[in-house]
Image 1 (cartoon, rainbow, N blue to C red):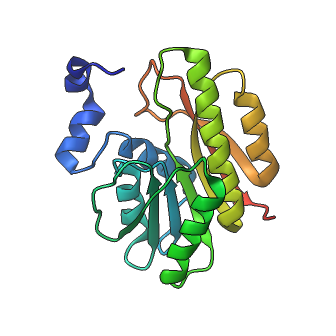
Image 2: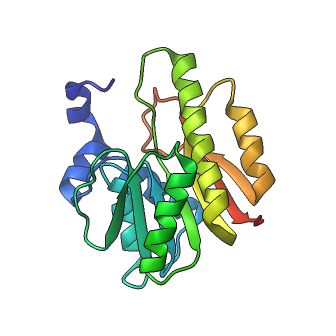
Length: 204
């Protein structure tokens, strides 16, 4: 749990407020993009576990007017210009994939270039339990990405470090030509989170 006093001292939180981003996590995606170049202008991007919308904001800026961003979350996402939102549970993988495909059809798109997920479980304070829940969410994100990504598409997902991390990383590595783990500067120093980046999806 982040204390309000810590937020006031958090430079990324302050910058997010100043620059109009909905969350400080926007800078994590900007730093990932700067290093790994996962999103191109005109891309179709799916953002899983998107609320409150910080990553979707960044993605929309990167894809521009010709690109499409589809956000998915159980929570309501306040309207973002140019972003299509779906209220849904990403652990209900088949339902989520079907809902996204419907949005793609309405946008006259037939595949996805990038799948993003900065999703976190509701924290219990039990590090092992929280890691397992993070693993389950990240696994759902990977399964959805596998169903939707075009060949050579890209994937970015957050997972907490712990006993299941290597298993998850290996699962991503099996599906992508290039796989890396990265901790952006914007991640809090005490955080167990790490981002796994898969580039150039092999395809099913």
